[in-house]
Amino acid sequence: MTRDLHQARDLAAVLAVRAGQLQLERRDTLRMGAPKAHANDVVSDVDIASESLIVDAIREQWPDDAVQAEEGHGGEGSSGWMWVIDPLDGTRNYVSRTGPWSVCIALYEGDEPRVAVVHEPVAGETFSAVDGGGAFLNGERMSAPAGPPLGQALVGVSFQPNPKTRARAGRVVERLLPVVGDIRRLPAALNLVFQAAGRLDGGVALDTNLWDIAAGALIAREAGVVLGGHGDDFTTELTIGAAPSLWPELSELFRAAA
Image 1 (cartoon, helix red, strand yellow):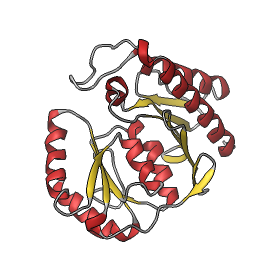
Image 2: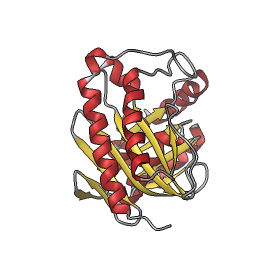
Image 3: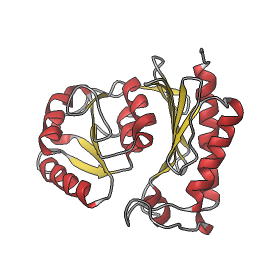
């Protein structure tokens, strides 16, 4: 079944912006729910409302598409297309007002990502990509630079805050800090799109879910970021990104530490 990917990208961008506006408007009145997988895995009523907004609109347009969404509004489909949605990536930052968060929407055809949108509500920035069509920030094409020397590189670190993964992240940070310029801890989607925009020179994400990285990974790839994991393909267990000139050193370092 064919699909107008630019139409899908445009709808995803509109929905991501709407969800981001909802999040800004309801930040002062949010209500927290019970933690999910562990004490640091938090969710609010705004996460759930944002996901409903996105999923309802997608199902109205493409009722036969499958949906995989973090807060449980997913379902099977018959079209061969699947939407992967994280309505609020970085809930802890959102709730505590200590950092950025984003709305993430990706569209897969079978196992292949075709469309991606990551929207950062506070900055009003919408990162997007269509498979084979390049990466864009607020409609302007972007391309990841080659990268500085490793000792000057700014590197993003993302990880699930469960005890096992925090131990892995500790080993990575211990290896990184002596050899790079500096590090930033970020939600996974922003880690990837900031690499695409050249704000970060590389990054690693540990033990994510598909909805955490699906959109950001396609945008990063389309911008020229090199992606991988323990092998040539990145996975939710290990996603490595780097500017081309930094890939050999950073990928070796991450693989050894993680």
